[in-house]
Image (cartoon, rainbow, N blue to C red):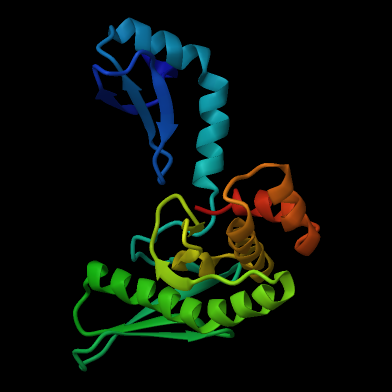
Length: 224
């Protein structure tokens, strides 16, 4: 029996009533449960083995995952995959360069993955600040909906949000996404200025300015 069971991380939470399965960004299976027997966990894993395989494959194939700074690393920008090369130099300052034809080049004197990650995040944040405000302004004029404020942050689960006071916050990692998907996120959040829910009226407004929004939603599922 053990040979057909997937490896997993088990987290016991006495407050739970059932066994829950999920995956982390690397495709590692996470089992959350109350205190139950090993036999009960194995029963669930066997019963849901087909779902586990399908779901793991989807997670592993997600685009835009964090890199580990190894040879062959790729970064996504505006929906395209670019190679990132590492070049050692004498100058102490770390620099991240980008060229559409060459891709990303990271110049460094000391190999420091945490510092590299900060420069990559800064790249996405800077590009978001360059592109998103103008895009939001254009759609605001078109939709006659105006945010009280635009802010940028890094988030794990949300691409954007709109507060009760109509302040919109964008996840700057959205710069990994294709441009038309970014436009959908902008339209989506602007629509929340009028409708603070996801009911029919909200989706009708989104569809008015983004007729193929369902295609954009499907594309979003390919990214992490």
